Length: 210
Image (cartoon, rainbow, N blue to C red):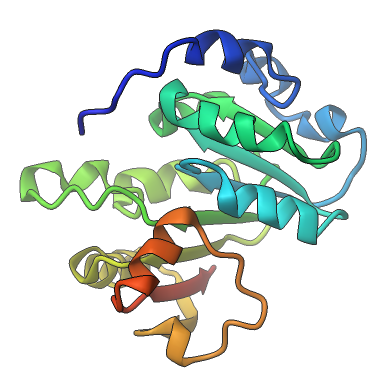
């Protein structure tokens, strides 16, 4: 995926009060980052931040972490936060999801996977965030029970993920083949979600636990 380089992005990311520059230093002790023992949820691949910012505002008694690999994308979320009141329950990390076990240890309650890169070629399937490679990594960051909520517009990725979850021992708690025809009462949309919904594309959603 080719991304446009954003001038000054790295500096803005490094200087943001929301960004943890050395998350490895807090591994196993993220409750100290938030200075409370509230549940901690993470969005892996947070993009430009609409979802994670919206969730942080909606649920002030839950702590949220947004993980994004590219500073040229993360900087857009930081720019949005400049117009918000302080969100003490939100932290952002600019790191590769492959390294998630180096940052977190048995402290996450829920993982959100929203409109992840589908990696359509078979030889790249282990890069998908719902592959067994990543599910095994998630085992080490969940605090107690394992809980994943996924949304996507990509049917192939959705079908692959259903098989991957169930083969790995997850049970399906909720599933929708077009969530906007079902109940979206508590839904916080992402920027991609709003775009695809306006185009009339179905949005798939699945919630699993273990």
